Amino acid sequence: MSALLAFAGVAAMAQSEEELAKLADPAYAKWGDTPLERYNNVNRSSFLKEALQNKNYNEAASHYLYLVEHAPTAAESIYQRGEQVYLRKWAQQKTVATQRQMFDSVLMVYDHRLQYFGTTPEAKAEILDRRARQYAKYGKRDREGLREAFRLAIAADVDAMSAELAETVALYFANLVDDYKNDEVYADEVLAEYERLSPIYETITTENEPFKESFETAFGTSGVASCDNLETMFRKKLANDPNNLDVLNQAVALMGRAKCTCDFFFEITERQYALAPSANTAIFLAQGFQERGDLDKATNYLREALKTETESESRQNLLVQLGMVELASNRVSAAMQVAKEIQEIDEDNAYAYFLRAQCYAASGCQEAYWVAFDTMKKAEELFVEENLKEQAKTLAQAYAGRWPLSNDERFFMEGIKHGDTVTVPCGVAAGLKTTARFR
Image (cartoon, rainbow, N blue to C red; front, side):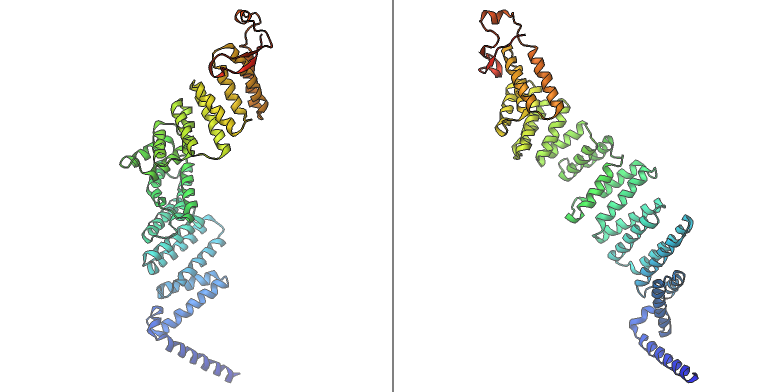
């Protein structure tokens, strides 16, 4: 037994001497000043890895702290493992206070790693970005610290032109909006950060589109984005560059989401449309101007939308809306022409009959009410929705109430009796044949 132990001791000594000789190479200088220091520190690094794997986190923490003191620049893996040690210790804590203490240790690891391995913009960005994300998971009770962590990460990402920037900004802004909703920050801070960060998304890659959408949605639903606040912000942005399409797109989207109806909103939407016409914007403007009572502009934008819309059902919908606006503007002939266009697409479109009937009723003579009644009854028959059926029925009854009385002198003198076929003499109904009816 003694001989075996002696042999083992000699073998271990020989192995240690061999390792010490190897560690004398200048390539291992980062592990210590002397071969013996390097030997001890390399072993400590192995012990850190093993303790972490074996879930001996207190032991692993002692190895980590030793290495930071004696070989801080030896390997970045020291800090990666140190982070895992303290995060796993964090998960073992039973109180908020001890979790906070343990997270402070996690932050300490990041400070060490940043000091010794954050020497390039790319490395600094990677470390601070990860630090901010871990803050959001493990240190989120410290709202001020979390916001500062993200601001540092964003600044580093910008300097390094990091691919993570778009996502990090979206994460930060979502947290900032949450803080505003919980009275942690004021509205002016959210507005200022939106203005500062939104240019980051001006040139955005396809894979980062969801982060841009998340950023804009967070702002749009924050409650900060009131029409007054948005007008103030975008007036300033557009003051020196009123035709900046990116800013106009952003302003229109946000003010539209906020359901703004101010003059400024319609002004910038019209400007956006002039620079980048689209059917959707034209329809939006038409509806807005119709609600504001500016029927001429509503008509113009509906006709603009029809220039580019080719899909059959969409064209019918636009024509129906146009016909109603023309009718409301008392342009009866124009409304009648629109009804004819609708029927060129679909002969049995209920709205076409609905429009026609009202045009006939506006023709200006009693005979026209006979045609209007028949046409509106056809619309009532074709409508599927009960509310529209009821509306058509009500109008038809109103037209019947305008039929001449049975003793009407003019029709008596002309010899026109109930059931006779007559030709309408007036308005857009002129020349149509109909059946005479009296009350």
